[in-house]
Image (tube, rainbow over all chains, first blue to last red; front, top):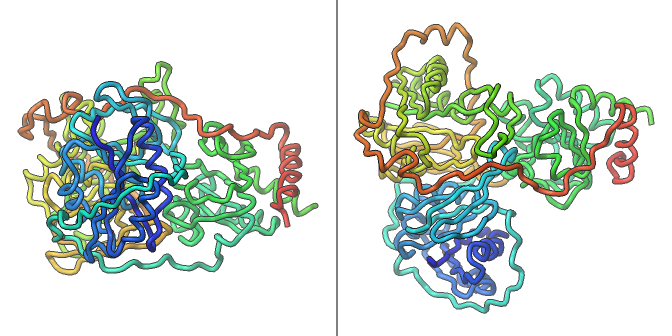
Amino acid sequence: MAKIFTYITFKNGVPDDSALELVNAAKQIAPDASPTAVVVGSGIDALCKEVAASYAEVWKVDNEAFAYPNAEVIRNVLSSILPQECILLVPHDTFGMDLSPGLSIKMDTVFMPDTVGFGGLEGSMLKCIRQEYGGAVSTHVSCDITKGAILNIRPGAFQPDESKAAAGQVVDKSAEAGDLSTKRVYLETVAAEVGDVDITKEDVLVSIGRGIEDEDNIEIAEDLAKAMGAVVSCSRPIVDAKWLEKSRQVGTSGQTVKPKVYLACGISGSFQHLGGLKGNPFVVAINKNPKAPIFQVADVGIEADILDFLPELTEAIENL
Amino acid sequence: MEILVCVKRVPDTAENEIEVNKDGTGIETDDLVYSVNEWDNYAVEEAIQIRDKVGGSVTIVSVGDEESEEVVRREMAMGADNGLLLTDDAFEGSDGKGTATLLKAVVEKGNYDLILTGAQADDGAGQVGGMLATMLDMPYASLVNAIEMLDDKKLKIGREIEGGNQEMSEIELPCVLSIQTGINEPRYVGIRGIRKVASIEIPVYGAGDLGLSADAIGAAGAGVKRLDYFVPELGEGAEMLEGSTEEIVEKLIELLKAKGGIK
């Protein structure tokens, strides 16, 4: 069995939730796995110590050059420090999507994107579970790990290992980082624009997706929101179509919201969208497609065309 | 600026309900409406806008069956200069690495400064661009939502990262970028536009034309293979409200009141 490593992402010195989720992901590949965490950054002693509470071994790669995580540089670092034929688990976030496909080529291993589960290991064949078409269907995918593997793991797909009983040791691998030159230089991060409404602070959201069909129909959602004392938020396609501002978008590439009540109107419910919905709200899904994935996660579902249903609901609330 | 844009023909999820077929070997393909992968449209639009600013050419390439010619033609109708179709029975069953290997062979036949792909297709893998870049030893950036030409050797790019923030970088040419939706507004292609490019010949390359051995591509070269399809069970599922619209509205209002959804 190849050695398992996990890549730790972090922000402001705090490890991402995925750091603990990857412990359990490794154990689902091999129940007796004791994965080694790899932390690449600048001034990361305290961070590595924290990670060592959950990992028996933490590899620290510390250098000022890693003050910002540039996947182009870190790809070279990982391919120089990691042994051939290892299994590396990486969170499938915007960093992992940037890093891993190329890393699999560099290390001549297989790559599995956006893994949500495992279905067992037989010989060198690892069975992975993925989703396609925005979560409408799932697939079992076999992956030949004879020469190792880079497995990107969907954030939130595995339970975190909260035991924190590893009392692990930190091994300094900084001297082995290798070539730090890069043809892609990080400049700055531009913060998301603040819109007229802060949807992250709202208790009730009327959220619209593709089912609204036309820019002119947004009024229908605004009328309902007004009647409820809520505000309108949306899924990605609405922002891509420039019908609403980016600041209204719920999802991993938009805002993370924590409402009490969330009306998902004509939203199919991709994991990127649901990734922005936290705090366990009461979710009402209204969609004309009874197989939309949103119905699997909603508390209450209504199979209806929102263009017909929302005006009825608005009128009834106005008449209360 | 010589630009290559990689596009893919996919079932249109906005037009279809995607369902698992009877024996679980794939999705139900009867009556499926196909179109170009949504992300790729943005990549083609971006390429055309760059060419219109600085000159050069835009070439569209697709790996797929013969029917993929229609998406190559559709994207050419947006204003691209050339099209290429890579089709061969030997390509079937290729994994991401196999597809990247095919595209690498195409890139090496040309002289491209910039290679664009969509950030992902509906299978959600988003892997071919990054693999291709490393195979070509070119720099790469994923989820690109802004491109600005600095000079003929360098671009300033934005990547869409968590929380709607944008990560700005400088990247040297030649490079590979995977394009996120929303970077631009892809132009509309009408029937007339497609007619205009209807007679342009689109060269078709097979494994032999690309000088590739059979074990590097197709099912034989794939380390990753789909075994079956099934319907996911994510949670307990919603309690579906049923009855007449009036009854549903009444039930929903009661629930919303109880949960603090109506102020």
